[in-house]
Length: 271
Length: 317
Image 1 (cartoon, each protein chain N blue to C red):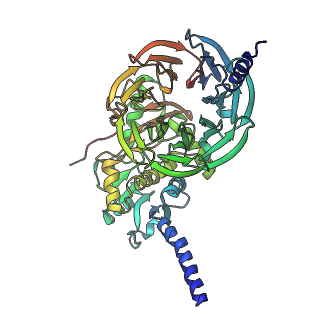
Image 2: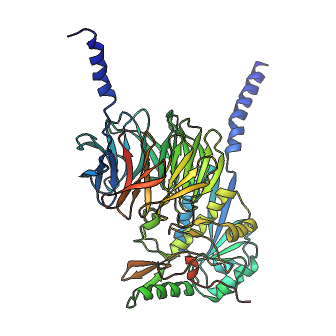
């Protein structure tokens, strides 16, 4: 009898310990897919984004994971658990992916092709700037500095303004290499998605795609609020680099028209 | 000596010990100039420029007004200045890349260590680290309630205000706000706080007991990237430094609607208001100036040239 009572007390004690813990366990588990190669710089960037997402998730009971998938397996792989798919693939594979996964955001981290933007594919989100954006950036700069041979980049390891210094510092610390355009794009794709999960608790891919495309206000650590055009292209400032030094930022002040970020690249869809 | 004077002398002696006579000076950290500019509170003229070390940013004052604390970021140190002699009297290590901090009524310093996703607590008398609190990425702004019970640390890249219970230095709440929260301030009662979010261009008003966001207000056009935030004396107006919009925005503390925008120098970040509530000082980073705003009219009455990239400002009043 006494033993039984002790057992009940013990059990209820354990229950008291367990129940709040259950309530505290991961509220949301988020999975990303990365279609590409294991040595892609964008994958390192995505891993950095994941570290940061989990740091934020620690305060919100959210957990983030990423799975690397070989492009050869895309037709057979089950993508149903992923919140979004990050890709470093050729353009044909990209078209195939957006087609077979119509209700999930397919982040393009590497292809600069303009037609991919004007095609306005509803689940295509292009983080990396298009060729047209880069060309507009260098042309704007040439109006100010006609003899410059600067080239356009999405990111640079010497970028310090707008807290870019902090991102460069922590990326180098964790990944042991400097951040470049690809790794910035991988980081940004994970970060904007995890920021959205934190803010909205959205945990399914269809709603995530809709939110990213229509309601995003993303801090890409380049100073401006970033969001997506109808074309699926991420609006963003672009750096102009000459002899590996940052010489300017586009939209170039005094040259670009307002709203400035839309002075870079293509805005409308090809009907 | 007349006997009745004894307690008076005693009092005077202790008063001096406990409450150092305020100098009235305004202290400015110049991030790129590696100096502190000292402005005379009566004449509003720079009376001294003191070399303090590599990249001074956050600046604060001890509760009794007898010591000025300066976060020298690139040296990972806090340096302590005597506000009267203007000499650096000691320094201590303050963790990696110390930036912004606030002084607790008990004299301890709560500081954000931007590189380490941590906030730490130091005793500035001994330089001893008393506690370390894990927070989000790029912790920045620190605010402490007047009763000393709560500390807010903003983490810019995690988009949160971490509310720390000062009694045991644990996080009691995490409040998600707009993108890149930079600074916060409490009302005197400690029940309400205001915070700025730089990238979303927002000011939020928060119920500190529930963690609920009561109101959101825009600090202006899309150039407006709000940083420092202070309340006026009767807590009816919130002043916000609007960064590259080159103005200080006065907002109604109830509705968060803009009352007026006060043009100041370029890239305005730091703000401090005098104890009597009459004057508001802003640091205009790119212009290298401090603007002095009269709060009764919300007009700039003086622009003072200081060092290169002025960042923080405090008043010894």
